[in-house]
Length: 213
Image 1 (cartoon, rainbow, N blue to C red):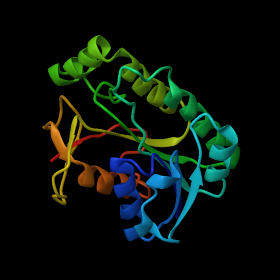
Image 2: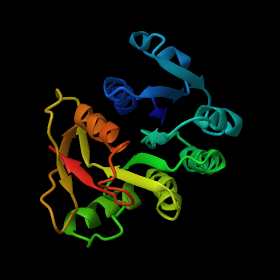
Image 3: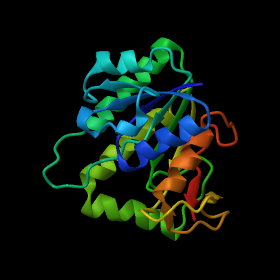
């Protein structure tokens, strides 16, 4: 498949690109900073450079794609202003509709609830903390996921709580709060592997599975 990845040079995004390549997909990477593009990609990855406000660049990166993956996440710093990822998500979704791309996989925290999930102490806590101490980041997460869940796309939102830099374990526990036992920590490498696997797997279409190790 032709897969366009946003946030492709981030900690999880770059690992996701490698996982997709290893699975035999053709990857287009959308990145803000050309200097962060790994030399190891060589000519295996087509790269578009642009901001999430650049509607034309986003459109060009999505043209010809079979699926889109977003590894974007809000910056947790006090000097970050506005809601650039919310704006960018709207541009991204508009481009997907223009080009007839239906499969979309993105990331979030359990501050976003699965449509069929019952709230638990974990989900309530994880929603309360950012609302109290990181309001802008919480608004960005909701702004990146609410329009997706309201769309007619074949979306999957991969949720996780505490990503770590430990080596890939090669296994994850995936499910839903209140019905499955989901822990807190998961390696970024395992997040990337799970994300890449969703591109051509319909198990969690229109669902938001939570994962942990």
